[in-house]
Image 1 (cartoon, rainbow, N blue to C red):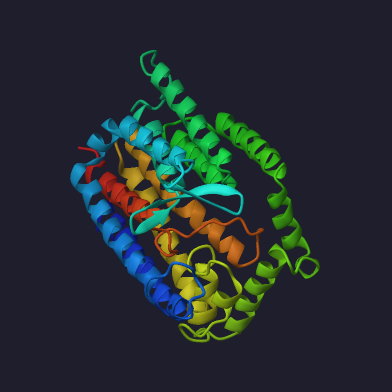
Image 2: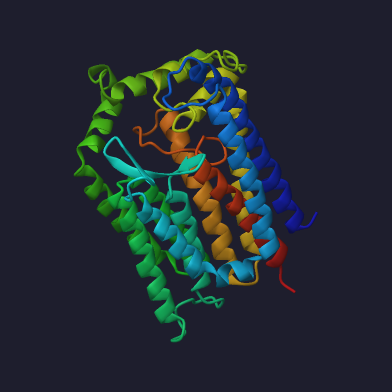
Length: 373
């Protein structure tokens, strides 16, 4: 079996499984909630699943479009796509378009769909850095490539700064990871990347610590019993969801879990907890395996590419998918404090679903066009 077919085998079925689980959980976990009128502004009982279905259809179209357009054209258009993503990131501050909640401006509401622009910015950074690197093993060696590469790094800083201003520190961290992986794909050595990653992590942590709500989340994580009126309540609710799954693999049944009653956004920020409780540990394991398969597909596509720019964009697109998924799972299983991050393809987040479809399409497109002649 060729590596191209392996990429298709690992990525496309995994994406379909994740998308299908997202639709299934949205239908089971939000129908009763919407019928009871517990969410303001819902037009019908399947509000979330209808919009998730629309976003999923658009994601499939985006994936096909990426394959059809091809990576070469996509990289040539990278500066324009990045500017578009940056405009979307700034549009959250425009009244009537941006949505402000819990002290943050992270969401856009346009027509029947809504979502955060953070996934667009992460993808824009992946494309821009990959496009403005050189195909040779040492991407910044040529004088003619250095100015564009420095400009790409500067634009990456602007994108991260935009996310910090929202503030959305988890998205800023994901974008930094995507940028570092793109640089690694372009051939930048670990002696540069490791200190840069450590410095950026410390700087991001220091800035985040200045916000009171971040301290509240950390306190709720460390002492949930003492913070029942704050984030500790949600930490305890997640623990109950894990306990409800018990030792069996079947869960309590779709739509019969209590997670959605105790958590503010079970269809988005805590969808993995809903899967664990209602569909059981086997379904949760299937989610983890599906994400691992997508990661393998990104690496396989990158390894066969004859151009370092193709390797970079495949690895960066894979990281843009895997990093938020890993953070989401870590929150739901109690490994890290609650940080409000959705799981691509599964959570109700139309922007993230659409972007994830495009990223899967990019990985497949790299596999189709990146093989040496």
